[in-house]
Image 1 (tube, one colour):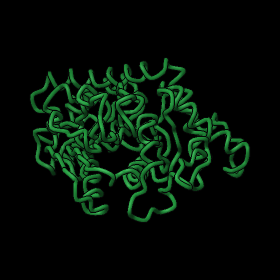
Image 2 (tube, one colour):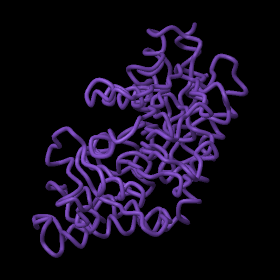
Image 3 (cartoon, helix red, strand yellow):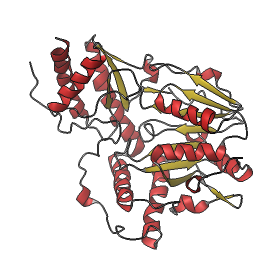
Length: 371
């Protein structure tokens, strides 16, 4: 029978993600609107976005946080264009965004000493094969495949190359070994449910040392330039952004950071996400027509949960559309480059009770489409 109880919040999109519980745009601190981002007030808000990020994440001493243009994509490409080329590079690929970084390295930067380690959707590359004498570019969590690295044990403390980690769907949701990550990027619109267009760039001391000792042979657009006169442009990491940011989005981000702290910090946010994954895991275990795309439970994402359904591609579209039309789940179709299936965001801004309400609807929709 058709269920009656619906999720109170049907927003399960994997980006932009659901706003935090209790979010109210009218509660934002908006005194920066209409003011220059270069004013004392504007710089203070932007500097706070950097310093509060570092504090709440518990970044090690010497790690810098900056607000950069172009969302997570801009942050990753800024890092690659600025840092790569001094030595060989390994690019790890098991979903579409990792494949995009490989394309940048091989076809745009045209690095000859580049090695692409690739796995199909649902699998992960053999991490033991990574060469850390090279720079290493990888996603911590494959947003479009639902496959994450299991931990940081495969990254050595003593390494010659840099680790450049796209962690946009992992920061604030997974335990990251910061001392093993030289560059980390993320965007506000993922785990924190913030607004789009802005990226966050985190640089460790080894990345800063590379920037100040190496100049890439290709021209750098203004929005990618992290140094001036051979030294790091420290102002970027104190709120002096390269281009004009949205101060409304900045206020929204600061609200999200305050919420993370209010619920108990990063450990509490991780616990909320893992509780959400547990709801889906219990449902999958009880139904043989649905499976996780991630084959190994150790690599199963607790944010972008990707699922395969015993339906053909057109039937999957009908299932997604049916749940949308019933107002119980929006934007849960798999990514366009991924295998046909569904993707349910389980980050900390999603309430576990909403996922519990969704599961009976998922079973009902499958029965309607498969009949």
